[in-house]
Length: 273
Image (cartoon, rainbow, N blue to C red; front, side):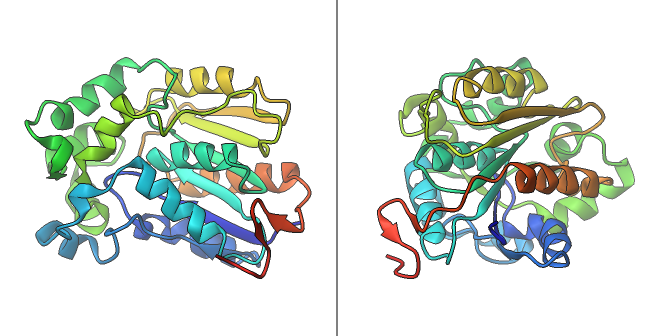
């Protein structure tokens, strides 16, 4: 049984968004790592004021390869838990043969799956901004309150925005449309068990899209499951009641974790690349 967990954040957030999950899991005796995307390290306010000049170059390939390298540093294959785009990276990493189990929370648009209506509307501010494929993009406070964290009380929106929201690379959005790097082998016989969770009030990644991803992923012979939290938004890992999501994710993963191999694919344990 693995005692290591890797938490993988999505766009517009960095590893700070996992503070609650990390502390909760560590209190249960797990070793928890939450790497940032490249150039996402730092306090959100500082990143908004002065984003790293190389952030605009970050794409799907670089991010997923970065997380693979971080996994290979670990002493055992971890449970992978990703949110939003991190839920997509989790699926790609599982497809590469990494991880002892995976949970994709509110997974973002995934190659090979039709976009939900909310996902289309929510992507427009980036996709309609000229040159966004080579720019660092910023989320507005209005967008955060109305679509990203739409279940937050209005008087809490500014506080949570200030604490958690960071810029992101527009390239990530365009890669999701134009790149084949996110392509997943749905019937991969070697994929670790996977749980997909969605939010009934999610205006970024429609619950219908999560169901569609599940319909693809269940072609694999390993265990695949779906859970929709009807009353939760895309901000589900931080919003009030996040503990329910955290506990459900870990409980499922622990019950379904596959036997831990003696080494990671292509890299013996204890001899990290």
